[in-house]
Length: 383
Ligand code: SF4
Image (cartoon, rainbow, N blue to C red; front, side):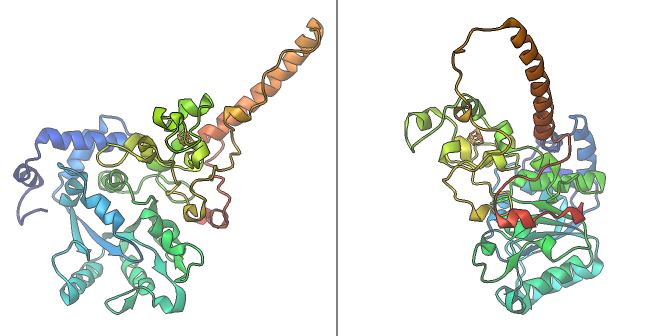
């Protein structure tokens, strides 16, 4: 954190973060946001601004995994660099103050307004919110009070975005996500279990640089991080296309790094940048370590059967394609010419439809996860 009166550059020097490291971080942020490399200078200027962005960070029905993910990044930490340009006025897990002093700091910050509200964890709505109370207030009252003077809300992790594990059937606390209870504020959702710290940092950096939140999809997820399916960038995709699947844990395919679709991988229906950004400073991610994607950035993922293959609508693995057989009759050249034209036309049309679907040219598509939750989650009124 900043010492009083210290410039950001002095803070970095004290922490052993060189100018080169700082510029490298700005470059990583530019590429995470899918912006040109030249934007790194713009980001650097925004981060060096003496103006500090106040932040109130709430933890509600959660496991603190998102806070952990953000704070446990290696040095020079992505999280630290961003925390150095923020004024985190309230975060009950990491702040030194506790009890009345902590609540007083939050009240002062809320009264001043103009802060970003980061929310981690679901909101309990059953029995007047009595299942999640902090300082004598229910999570519903806490979020409504804190949202009032916030300039924007960043919901992190799948609990704060879609209800997450607390919402799993039978959902005894009637847990919901932030966008289900706050409807009059700009909200951005960063689902994932936990949130990827790079995506949180990039969202904050985007706000600091351009004074607005990044562009989002129907579920309020930023397109820079959730604009493509995991399957489209997966390092095992070549094996999917070749029909090479792991069939059993530890079999030959598993040892050779083949596709995990048959083991229940949800990569084909999950929008997230895990394959490109990865976790733990870009070290690895679940599929790279041999475990199928569980779809943790999608609504209702907690109800999906982890190890059962998901139904695919847009494309199918090659083993489901009809087999290629030798022609059983003699070939009539005239018939071939007519059929070829017809097939060419159909193929071209099908290709155009597939291209539009896969590139979202005809609008962003909601993933086809067959759960009740997914159906309920069309929040087009937010876009
Ligand atoms: S099904 Fe999963 S493991 Fe296979 S290519 Fe797609 S994302 Fe990768």
